[in-house]
Length: 103
Image: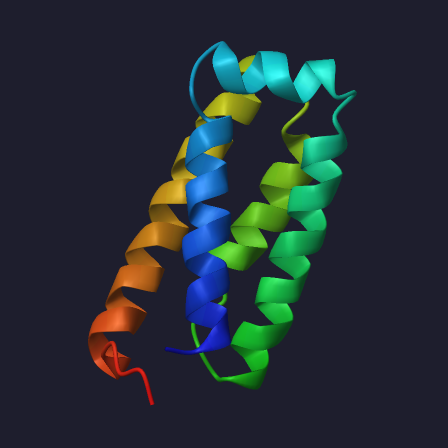
């Protein structure tokens, strides 16, 4: 499995967690929006690996945008959910194409 696919699974799962109503928002606010900065870096790293491996980049770009506007309460939650869907679908499709070889 490609590194970009693994990073998309991780970032998609985290985005889904941040999109949980009330819980995700409370955790993000309680850590003074630090999770948004961490997610920005994670999406940037995922984008770099996706470009290098010639994989789809739309989920990572959407994640970067989400990290920048995620501090807005309702908009941030909706964007986290949408980003999670894009990243997880892309990771799933990429996993199906390359397979789950352990070589």
